[in-house]
Image 1 (tube, rainbow, N blue to C red):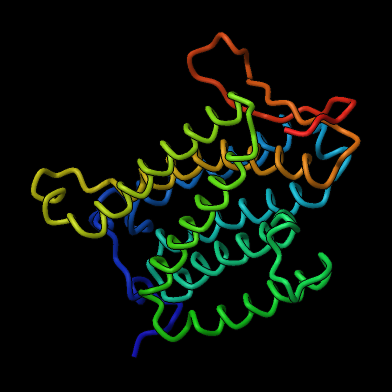
Image 2 (image 1 turned 120 degrees about the vertical axis):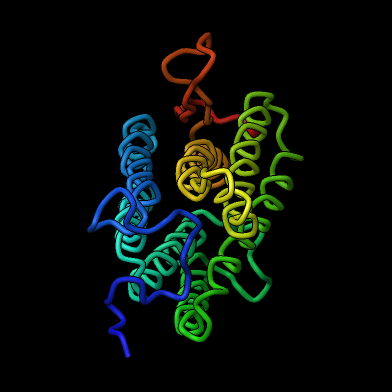
Length: 263
């Protein structure tokens, strides 16, 4: 029986052919495409530094976990090991759990949850249980994690109904566009592998890494925007674009202004 650390001991093997570009890296493009997460993390911290100065822990914590997601995903696609698969999936689970803990609006808490501290216990307990359940059938983990995105989209829709800022709505639309492209690439790689291999283009999972990072580049400033609206009433959040509003391709970030006006 092969070790759980052994190459190709994972239950999942993506569409890209193994060991074609390197004798050490199983899925070459699926591995190097994770560089997008290493770029994403410092970009978020630098552009949203004003938010970090006022409320440092959430974004620093999430940015660190995003780097770990990139590291573990690289390790998984490099080795296709069982341990790599679990680390890849669990790092995403814990990143989502921490994001929910810090940023889930108190107005949406279950009725039996009275404080943010109680919500930490709820998300922590749920995450620990989910972690242990992840070992039962690892092949289902990725599908379950992707389903969480549907809840995030539902919450985004609810928040946008309360907001009249067109820039916020535009950024949410771009975020959804990147997410749709990302999940389409993921599903295509998983279910249409026979087609991509037939035309010698089995690289859609590497596209998933880049596209989901792009989606997060828009998603996290959107989350920060609403967090400032709810949790920092002395400030008014304002969306800005780097390098400039006039550029065709921009990166959004949030600045803080006084006085606060409800969106």
